[in-house]
Image (cartoon, rainbow, N blue to C red):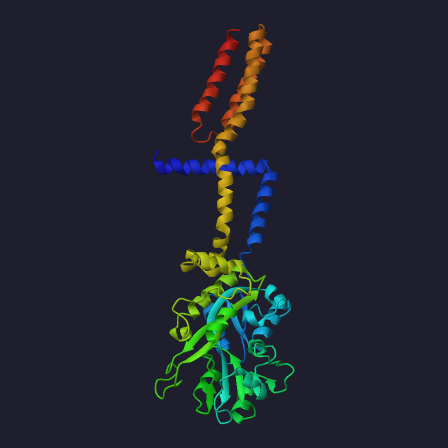
Length: 446
């Protein structure tokens, strides 16, 4: 017999023994199936494929970011959709609503209150977003002190936007109470931009990336000035959600040079936040989309290459999935398998390793089920042979008693033949036959 043929027979006999074992131990089979089902249910390998990303107004930087992420998710077999919203606070309120389909969104940690931060999880930050304070140079010669804004008409973003909340917190440092000052007018971003261009408001405060269309238009308007945070580093030291960034002269446009001089800015970071119960595989897919989204150098205006995504805003608790992603990187199997299979393997391997660690030592106690079953089935035969041997040793048998012994030995022999012999157990089988033969001889001479 070749090695291949021998291995084939071993596998066949082992499978037969396992099948027979389960047939005889139905309780064990049921328990095994229930455990397997519990593991599958717990790991939930088949997530809902819909990802609804809360952004901001249509064609804004967040909206465009979300569209790029959505395209990436669609390529991976998911259904990514972008939802236009009023901004950072509105996004989180949607995430907190169990009936709202939005399950991922952009936001700022500094724009949220404690309750809102506890209800969502952060996948990390994707970009620096400065506080842009634009002013009408026809009405204001120069803006050197933010306290001056208290006497001007200032346009802000919507009440549910991060721009409004951050502006309110910033101006509170200068003893300006936005809510009680009628000069500060919250409105939709595009409407506020129009008011500013039309001269209805003197200044416009917004928080967004440099790629935002409103920022790009206002930066190129010769009648619009940009406030220079000369003490930007002080904000960075005082608030862990703020970063000091610099807009170099000519970095927006080389000729004509925009801006004309270096401008210091205070920025926060945009975080991607998700519902806490969002499936881990969907979170992993979003993290991969965030990584892909930041490969383009246009998105890295204030950042270093490979700086994002990163967990930079500690105000929003990090998701366990994101924490593992930043510590160990994406699962290597994602290079070769669909995201949901890769995610399932990534979550299941620890459990499988634990099961192996438990059952492998136990398996060493009984590695060959076929051998165990053969020994178990042989045991009654040997018990009967021992009983016959004891009978032969105790007295002289009559012819009728000898005939009964021969009948019992024939029955044992026949039963042993019909039971089958698994590979590797042939010597034990012939030991049994030899024992039967010896008892026949002993009966003859009794």
